Length: 289
Image (cartoon, rainbow, N blue to C red; front, side, top):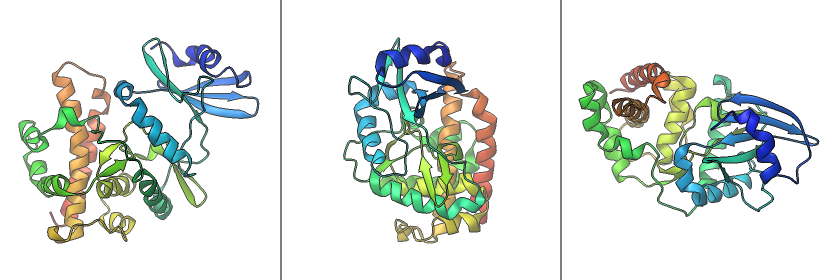
């Protein structure tokens, strides 16, 4: 991929000629670029490599969430498509979403909107679709032991058993605060590249953990009222802590596995994931594990 900022005029002319001429183009990240035209504004996105094989699924996801009013929507190209391939890359143009990243005080708003999002995604029948990390992180317990994460592997045994025997549905897959925007009494969700068939309760836990960290009481309040808790695991807080550690460890093990293969694209995130894992372990400890 060349500079996305330089590619935008070409992409607009090729796939969105019906939009007005561009007034401003501004790079947001290496994979996202703000674009403003007369009467419209959006974000051009260069999608992750794993999205190429998921375009029909992603089209169904975006069509479902765009009707919900709580998620980003995509501009339709002149060819009637939402996603466009160009010189080896996959691109889309998303309508600009107004809002700010959530803070601790926005927890209730995020929780209510996330429940609404899961209700919408539950109606997406396409699947099953694996998490893009899944091929690298099968056998997570064994891989964790191999990286010397023995205490962490012990903690995720609860989550591992639960996830193997629990109901699944389509979930967002990457609910860090950067993919959530709060506007008034509503939270909006962006970037569904990591959507997959997964466990909605774990996504609730991970969203709460990324918002509150190791504050067990606040995380518990975030997920209060969620009826997916399996009674056979006893205390809800124990499973909650185990699921948080499991979700962070999955990402960490992926980065370590890729580094072993000589792929360093994710190494910059390694220390952050180690920190998040230590915080998740603190949460699990305060939850009784």
